[in-house]
Structures are given as C-alpha cells and as structure tokens.
Length: 273
Length: 121
Image (tube, rainbow over all chains, first blue to last red; front, side, top):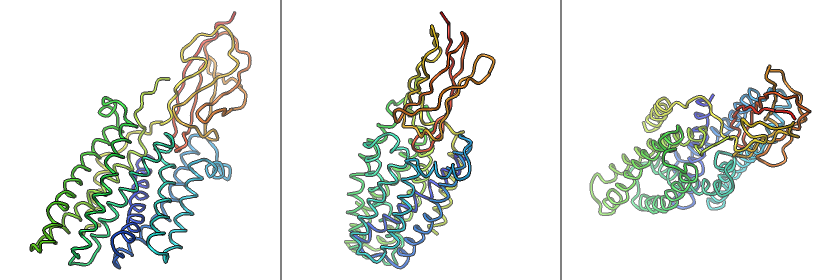
C-alpha cells in the first residue's frame, strides 16, 4: 500500500510541478511551445485521475484501520482536513483548467495559491503552519525551477539564447529559495543527525540530497558554462545545454520520486510513549 | 526519449527505495495513566496525547483486562486536536491493556498498546 501511495504521490507531485511550473514559465519567461502547452494539459489530465485515485486508496486505508465503510467512510474522509484540502485541490485544478485563457500572470498567481493547499494537506501540514509554509516555498521554487526546465526541454531547436538566459535567471532565483527552505525543512523534520542515518526517512532524505547535488552541478554547468557560451555564439553550446537540461529533467523526476517517498515515511522525531 | 528516461529512472528509484512496512506518523507522546504504571484506584479516564493532530473519526481506544476481555468504556472524546480520551467504569484490581489506533491529519495510521495496573485500596 505504501508503494501505491508513493507512486500516486510521485504522479501527483510531478504533474503539479509540470502544470504550475509551466504557468510560471509562461508568466516569467516566454509563451509555451506547442509541446509545452500539450504537457500542461497532460499534467492537468493526470491530476484529474490521480487526485480521485489518492482519495480511493486513502479511503481503503481508512477502511482497514477503522472498519468504517460505505457512505459513512466516504463522508467521514471527505470531512477530514485532508479530505477538505483534497476537495480544494480538485476545485483549484478545475479553476486552472477553466482559466486557461486568462493572462499568464493571474494564472501563475492562481497556481501558486493552489500549491499552498498541497503543502497543508501533506506531511508538512500535519506539523503545523510554519512547516506547511516552508514546504510551500520549497514547492513554489521547485515548480519554478523544474517546470521551467521542462518547458525549456520542450522548445523546438534551436533554443533562443534570450529564453535560455531568462531560464538561467529564474533557476538561480528559485534555487535561492529552494535550498534554504529545503535545509530548514530538513532540520525541522530531522532534528538529530543520528535520526538522519538511522531511519528510512533520513536515508531517503540523504539519497534525495545526493541527487539534488547532481542537479545543482548540472545547473551550475548551464549557468556558468553553456548559457554564457551560447551568448558568445560558441558552436555546440546549444546542444550541450539541451542535453544538460534533459538530464536535469530526468534527475529532477527521480528527486520528485524520492520526495513522494518521504511523504509516506514517518518523520523520525523522537517519540517516547 | 527524455520521457522514457524519466519513466525508467523513476521506476528504478522506486524499486531501489521500496518503502518499509507502513509505520505510523502520530506517536504517543504522553498517556494518563502512564505507560506501565500502577495506580491505586480506577482512574477516571484514559487520556492519550499524540505528537500530531488526530482525525478522531478513524481513531480508536480500547481497553482489555488481563484475560483479554474487552472493557466497555465511555465514548471516544477529542478535547484537543492531538488528544483522545475515554472515560472508564470502575475497574477491579488487575492488569489492563490500552490498545490505540489513530490516524493523523495527513491520514497516516499508527497503532500501539501499553499496560497499566490497578492496585486497589
């Protein structure tokens, strides 16, 4: 059941980031390509399937632990904080889909607000408002960074230099939020180093941080190497950038899978009944 | 090509990092009567305080005596977001086990049990 939840959690997170990151990219970088627009709709369609699936799997888990079933189970689950926030997310998704013709700025702002519901619904929300807000900042920055990279990877070749340069600025700004928010969240949830190495949560977090550092290295290669080289008109720089961005997207997808796994693992705070 | 690489990498990551059996997320922080304690007389209630907020609709607290017979308690109460309480009838001297199962507000389930002893006067 945990594996199913982690897989659904990954699909949820990845689709959310592709959707909202695409909206940020449209507002801050450039209108999406045809392929980029198609992936928005695919992400929205995936979420339209994944959100009810998560409700169904959670209802089954609640049946297992409580013995409640039928309408009572569905109504009671819908009335929980998780259920109400899930309904809010589904309504927000419908709003985003219906508002597809809005200007990119308001649509991106709507997407940013919509992410807040996810942060309050998950692990972080169970640990209080501060934890949820930090998670939201982390999620916003991840959407801006990875969503921007996805849109860049979907652009037709050759990639315009000015778009690559804008993604470079957005990625740097996103990292300036992502890294401190991530470190803060890590310390908030894993308060002692021995818990970091001695718990499934901690070990998964270490794997995530290791892979995130690979992402950072690829981003640094783009920031300091490939994009400036494109500006200088260096041959093959654009090809190197596109390869690095595709690798970043792949590594980013795995980082999101590890993040989804963290969402179903218990945080290792010292518990003493 | 990138999409296939993404799918392969995610499947590999999920396979390599298969999650362990489900573990709870709301841990018992404090119990009244205390875990393993001996009390002189029947306490008025069992009060369990958890490390996270609880969804009472999916949570249970049950009491059994030393022979495993279930003791009828009062209805489950949820006076604070992370506290569950059940009132107790008069208990004869002996050992009792409190079995609890709770669901935290992020829907993760956890359960546990502990014993306490009523010494009697």
